[in-house]
View 1 (cartoon, rainbow, N blue to C red):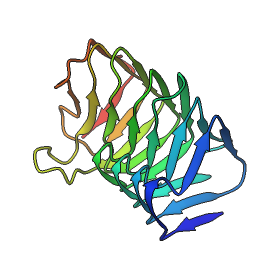
View 2: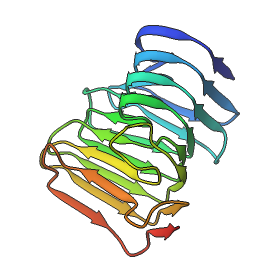
View 3: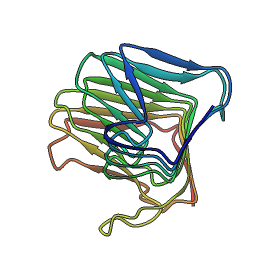
View 4: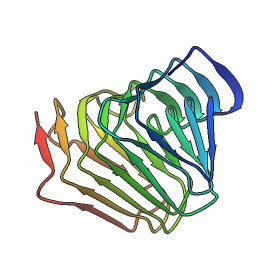
Length: 193
């Protein structure tokens, strides 16, 4: 399935409400634009899971919030698994804009713009077993090679068993402008310069 060159003034080209999208065949969303979620808008405990890597590709999508995926404020636990994110752009959250309580991001590939934005207070974001490659930023105040995570007040961010390739030495930047409670990066995170 190919969703390409679509525009939506409001929510993403694909809108999930209380749904779990399980991709078993190739699915590509490329060069789409929307206000929230250039490719996908998720709400009410929705999740997107590919049964194996490289099945779902979200590439060069543009939005105000959530270049690839916007996750709305309804519901609690959200899972994003086995998705490939390539060069998506947004004012906040190039890859993912998250306005919820608990986000599990695992076994994904991120290339290019990679900002993850957590807007809700008192939430938890688990980033584990992901691959970040050729990270670049179009934000003027951030150097290329930096994984950017923006977090709301009292949030806990856990980064485990992930690989960052072709990045700078201080590769993870957590902007706690809103006051993140806790940031945990375990020893199994591998950084390759």
